[in-house]
Length: 61
Image 1 (spheres, rainbow, N blue to C red):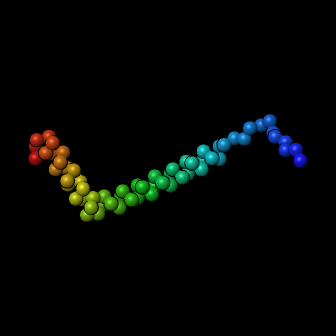
Image 2 (cartoon, rainbow, N blue to C red):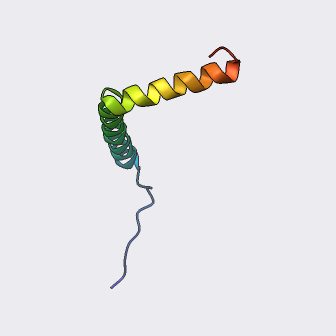
Image 3 (spheres, rainbow, N blue to C red):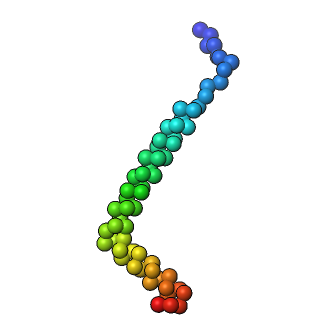
């Protein structure tokens, strides 16, 4: 049995759309995780430590 190959090449526009969809879903999930972490007690402690560290580097605090 002989396999015929078409002269036209296939477009991969569907793959690009799927990649964007996966990237968007991953970005939204990561944003939700960051929001959850930073709005809780962990976020308060992290921002306070970061602020104190920057102030000490600048020689202010």
